[in-house]
Amino acid sequence: MRYERGGFPLHVNLHVGTVMSLSATSTGRVFRAFDDQARVAAMLAHQAETNAPEMAARIDEIRARGIERGIDAPSPGVSSMSVPVFDGAQRMELALTAIGPIGSCDVDWNGPLARALKAAARDIAGLLS
Image (cartoon, rainbow, N blue to C red; front, side, top):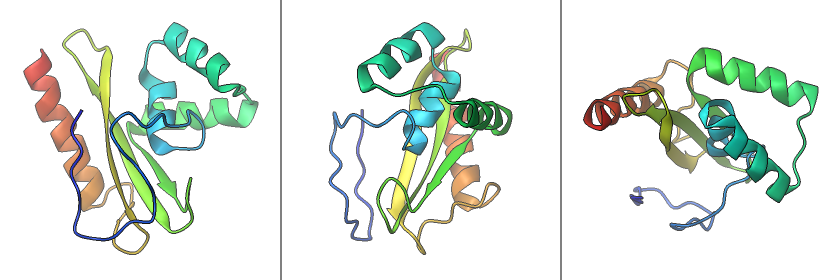
């Protein structure tokens, strides 16, 4: 795991090893969408989260887009984007997530941050193949 500090102050306390909610964070929803479903089910049980129909529809949308975002969540004033990284067998190995203050973190589905995250995920996947 690698943690890069950005140039903007952020009012959240994240550190290597932070457990992210599988429903309330873009990172967690990417894992729900792309990780091994047996492992996801075990994590959901541990986090006492449910599989509500609206979450199932959102997970389907994430799979179709290949990227997820959080706006003003899970902390007010904070946005994020997250993408999966797959190995050569198309198994999700990790997620890349960028987090920043609203206003300095462009979370447009096709914006520069989304394109950069997807490109980085492709580059890393190429190294994992």
